[in-house]
Image (cartoon, rainbow, N blue to C red; front, side):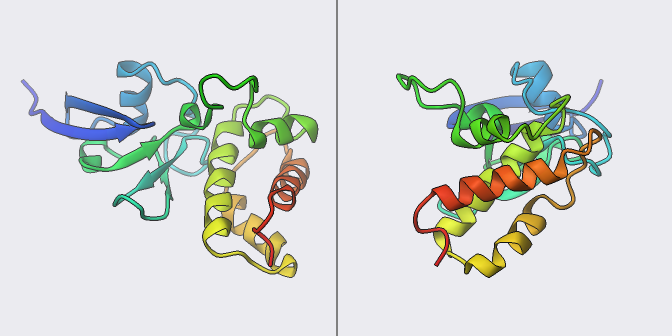
Length: 177
């Protein structure tokens, strides 16, 4: 018999309470127990970043990237998690994709698409960071590199991802000062 711990996590705005094994990875909770399969497991050791989700440690705090493949769900009690599913257009919207996803599509940023959820999540957090603290246009490329530079795309779509992210940032007023 394994020990189980109770966790209460807010995932995409929904309260989730579960009894989990202390070492259950967040990605396993998301995919196997909650049916949220958008977050991808690729390397399984936190290197590729395909499994990136965002976490808010406290209400109102800035979101931070979190690697779902290597983070035990038990450590996230009381946290607010957003997955790729949480970035869907709001109910009633005629849009089928969010702005970031549409920009990636428009710029032909991905090929196989396996890494795309991680890039989308990182871009979403970058946009939120820029809303809170706009930057000069001359700093944009460095900000993009900082947000997604560690993400791995096996199909080498980096240039197009960067172009799409740049387009999304420049399209939103107030992010560049």
